[in-house]
Image 1 (cartoon, helix red, strand yellow):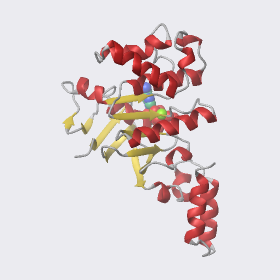
Image 2: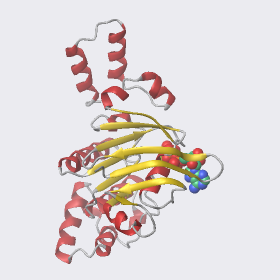
Image 3: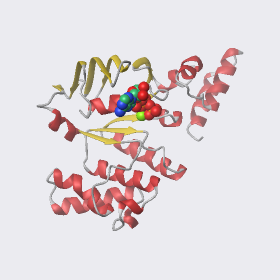
Image 4: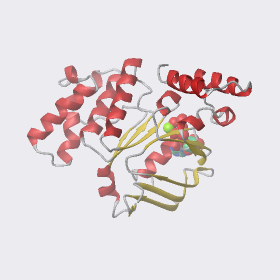
Amino acid sequence: MPLIELQDVSFSYGKTPAIDQLSLTVEAGEWVTIVGPNGSGKSTLAKLLIGLLKTQQGTIQVAGETLDETTVQGIREKIGIIFQNPDNQFVGVTVKDDIAFGLENLSVPYEEMLKRIDHYSKAVGMDAYLDKEPSQLSGGQKQRVAIAGTLAMKPELIIFDEATSMLDPTGRQAMLEIMHALKASGKTILSITHDLKEALPADRVLVMHEGRLLKSGTPRDILRDEPLLKKARLTLLEPFKYMNQLAKKKQLTDEWEALLWQSAFTL
Ligand SMILES: Nc1ncnc2c1ncn2[C@@H]1O[C@H](COP(=O)(O)OP(=O)(O)OP(=O)(O)O)[C@@H](O)[C@H]1O
Ligand SMILES: [Mg+2]
C-alpha cells in the first residue's frame, strides 16, 4: 500500500486549474523530489496533502485513509511540512518554545521533549539560539528553526517546499545530510525544489507543469533530459551537459557516465 495516493485530483483557485486531474503515488520510505516552473502547482499539491486546501475533484489517500474532514486531523499528525517562507510559521516567544509547541500538542512527555529540542536544534545548527525570539532571526535561521520544529515531531512524511531556498551552502549541505538520515531511518520525503542538485539523491523525480505530471523517473533519466528540463524552466547541471555531448558523439562509456554522475554530487 502506497503512503500517498492521489487519484484524478483537481483544484483551482479561480478559473484555471492549479492542479489538473493529477494522479500519483508515493511509497512509504521513498524519497521523491518534485520539480517544475513557478506556478506549476507544487505548493498547491503540498497544501492539498495536508488538508490546508480541499480537493474539488478526485481523492487523496494517506496510509490507506481517504483524506476528508473526519480524517484530516489524524493525517496531519503523520505529515510534517516546511514551507518556502518561514515567516508566519512561528508561534513561540523563543526558539525553544516554538519547537516545544508542536511537541506539546502531541503530548510528548517533558523529558523526551527536552531531548528532542536539544537533538534537533543541534542538527540544524541553532542550539545557540534557543532563548532568542524568532522575530530576531535571519530568514535562513528561521528556516532552520522551522525545520527543527517539524523534524522534532517525527512525522512519517516530511514535505520540504523549497525549504532550503534561504539557506547558505553550508545550511543546504546540512539539510541534505538530514534528508539522507531521514531516508535511512525509513521516513518518506517529498522535496519540492528548483535546485536540481537536491534531486540527485532522490529515488524518483516528478516533473510538474501546469498542474499536471509531465514525467516521473529516476534522477539519472530526468536530469539528463534537456528538452524536458527546458519545459520545466530548469537548467541542466554541467556534468549532464557533458554526458549528453559525449553521448551525441557516441563516446559516452560506462566509465565516463559513472564519473560524471559522481561529479554532479560534488557541485
Ligand atoms: N492563494 C492563491 N489564490 C489564487 N491563486 C493562487 C493562489 N496560490 C496559488 N495560486 C495560483 O495557482 C497556481 C499554482 O501555484 P503554486 O503556488 O501551487 O505553484 P508552485 O509550483 O508552488 O510555484 P513556485 O515555484 O513559484 O513556488 C499558480 O497559477 C498561482 O498563480
Ligand atoms: Mg511553491
